[in-house]
Image (cartoon, rainbow, N blue to C red; front, side):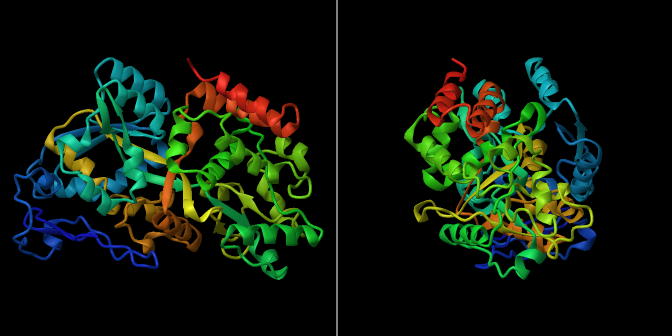
Amino acid sequence: MRNRIVAALGVIVLVASACSSGGTATPAPSVAPASEAPAQSAPESAAPSTAPEGLLARALAGEFKGTTVTATGPFVDEDAVKFNASIKAFVETTGITIDYQGSKEFEASISARVDANDAPDIVDFPQPGLLANFAKGGKVIDLSKTWSLDADALKASYNQSWPDMGTMAGPSGDILAGIFDRVNGKSFVWYPKAAFDAAGYTVPTTWDELIALQDLIVSDGDTPWCIGIESGAATGWPVTDWLEEFMLRTTSLENYDKWVSHDLLFSSPEVKNALTKVGDIFLDPELVNGGTAGIVTTSFGDAPKAMFDDPPKCWLHRQGNFITSFFPADAKPGVDYDVFYLPGLDPQYGSPVLVAGDIWAAFSDRPEVMAVMEYFTKGEHLKVWVQSGGAIAPQLDSDLSWYGDDITRFVAKTLLEADSVRFDASDLMPGAVGSGAEWKELTSWISGKEDIDTALKNIDAAWPK
């Protein structure tokens, strides 16, 4: 990654470093008071302070001291504390006040404020779908047109998939509507390490090896998978993640994106093929603890607990990194449980990762606002939050040493090294589909109440006209 040298109240050096071939990044840029930073001279190649790409440099040099940037998002309680801690050094160095006011009713409140032309300067969206609505309506700033976050800068900061996902339809063409910040990964398989090692099992690194492990567990008289999709009114959401995993592993990113926008129907051969592969696991009673009846009646949070029985009732659980909060309180990471990446299936689609996370958008384009947005593209912004737990940084200049445990570090490393990433598709689809018909119909299919073709056609029929 290219080095960037910027002055700050004297001079502060931001060195954005490249990830090594092993995926471990060198120390990320730091923002510190000028008294703590050694003086440096900007190289002749550095952009002049009046250039658009100098906004962050100018902010760090104190040019925007005394200004205020208003912000909102879903961070409340402990998350709000962690967010404010993560920006403290920047605020102290630049003199820019970031006035963050979180909301537990974020979606409703931000919609009302935008409609009333009272949007904050910057907004954190936990789901890109809502941001896409505002982008299409011409409500958000096209970041690529108002500051220096050009293709080269984005390439230096992110895996290309992230700016791809931040690019959305505007009133008259695509715009860079937002930049991704705190994220989490979903493409992971958890297993009971102590029992797994004692059984002589080996972590798979390819799809064929995963199938071989699955078959070996069955031949040993056990059940490979722990799966539960019960979640009250939201029953069915975990299976949508499985479908998304197989879409990323069996067809192109272009088709995945078309599926999200319904330009590729659920009843298309591509989606049916992906769901059929989900069924190869879900519908085989030898492969899932409790069979199909167990899948639909077991809470998603209770499903992995069977791994910790003695002996385990099942051995593998695919879920995002949040799932560890549902593990037994005395289960120790790296001892009682561990994790591996759900392998790619087809070499032409590489090693994709399904993700969720936060994306920041701007509703005003004052220089201090854009300086804050540029700062959010730096891994340094998330360092404090990462160190305190609860955040994974997608920025390439983030440092794996910030993570406090090997498992979270592995998740972060996998995200940084992924060939491609894509956001949870059901979260991007209209609510009537992604959090409605898809949950209901896929649950009915797993229960045997509907065949696969009927379920997929019914989901298509629910798409808003």
